[in-house]
Image (tube, rainbow over the protein chains, first blue to last red):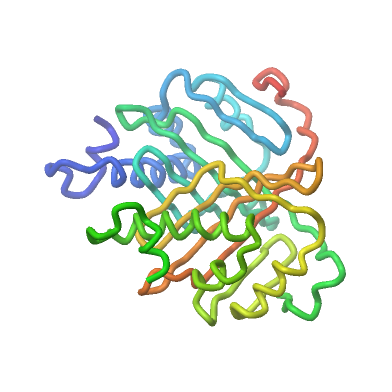
Length: 140
Length: 140
């Protein structure tokens, strides 16, 4: 299996959470490197990708790969944190397009055989704090 | 310890990830119930709360509790998913204020003794999809 072969010392059996954690790391890394074959190898054929903020859904690995290949701009992704738990993971991403920065929160689900079956992406945008809590907060 | 006593069958030792998962669940539940004492018991005294979208930071359990107590509106929180991994967790929340709905992505860090030491909250807002990807997506 492609995922396991890239885990250092993967001769020993790898537990589900470790496999999920590593596949999540490879997912971000493959997208960042535009390694479409490696990205494809991480996904189930009928995977689903959702962006709840715009209520958009992409069905299937093939359309999802096209979406990534066609995504405009010189975008870059860096992992801030990965949290893995059985067949679920969450990835906190530092995203950049040119000099613009935007964090992402990504929720992943995995199939029986350790492939990504569902991805839900949030891209939270900056906003100004509402008035009334200045006595509690500091700004950066 | 307050957290452990609420885990069913907690006579057996509880591993770090299970403790983190349960404390994350209790954190959301305590806020939803306005059980400020239970919420306080889950936090380190010098915990830090951050909202990167507005670049706001709150230092200390006491100020964070005040922030929650003073937060306007009839707000409600429901867990969509919790992902726990050692001393890290991510919580995907269905938030409501009256009839308005907004999801949240929450990143938590825990201290040696299983208390929440850092919380980073994102509240992604709806947006219209950019043009050019209609051939790949469906809307809901």
